Amino acid sequence: MPVISVGNLVVGGTGKTPCVERVCRLLRSMGARPAVLSRGYRGSSTAEAAVVGDGERVLLGWREAGDEPVLLARSLPGVPVVIGRDRRAAARKAVEAFGVNVLVLDDGFQHLGLRRDLDLITMDARNPFGNGACLPRGLLRECPRALADADMVLLTRTRGLAPERIASLKETVGRYCPGIPIVSTEHAPTGWVDLRTGEVLPLEAVHGHKVLAFAGIGSPAAFFHDLKALGVRVVEGVPFPDHHPFTPEDRGKLEEWARLVHATALVTTEKDAVRLGDDLPGDLRYLALRIELRVREEQILAAALRRAAGLAPDGPSGHHGLGPQRDEPAGSPTRRKR
Image 1 (tube, rainbow, N blue to C red):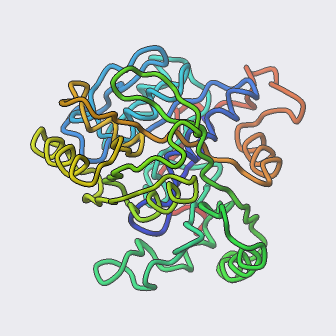
Image 2 (cartoon, rainbow, N blue to C red):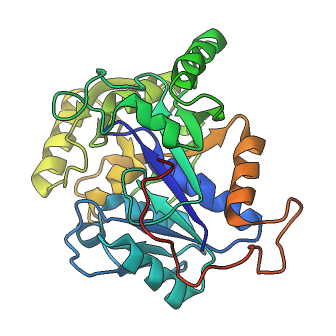
């Protein structure tokens, strides 16, 4: 069974979740039937494998499954999302329950329990190596030499960067992974979701408005920067720890703060919106910024996905879009390429 991994080297937000979503959408457009496998980070579920979403319904909440799997289950109709600390068990569950034929590992670069056919690494173009030190002194999970184990690097958040800056960064990253494609991507805002009504609003709906922004993601500052680039007047930007579980007290304080600074709305990310809950207090608007990952050299990524999944260049093969199948849903543990 083909396995495609999306991971990173640095702790925190590098854009893995939007990348997983884009990979799944591309695979479906090629005729494949992917499923997402996730550990379910910060979720309370202790099941060997649990279904977060069956492609039609979201079956688990964020407290059980973690916020990222729930967001993916909401965002990817037709794509099952399965969590489990044992990814092999999760893989078996996805194959047996849903008949999928491609597995996409969310945050899988350091997970060595499954053989992978394609290793994608996301790196934040604005801070690709953190402070240059590995955990616990720094943010690196592995030293940069581990990039040699990847099959492709996706530079995220390149929106607004000068072409020469991107070219220089590609040269720097390429020293650790010679011969591996390095492609540029950007987080492209597409609209706003009204968290009370579910209505999707155009980006212009908040242009020039005074807002209080808050985020509990890996890089809140990047989110605040994106808002200002959209012409939103961020009168206060309130960072929370990554994956912060918002309480009624948190929401009450945010609303009080918003009124003090005369903000017309509270705005956050879609991932944070998962943890806000449905019963929002008060009368202020809560809006979540909807984004998608856009890959500038998408033909390179698409070709790599086709090869990894065994798809014919011009469409699905005779095996429901896949090449020869292995007996197991995934292969033996491996240290990537090494």
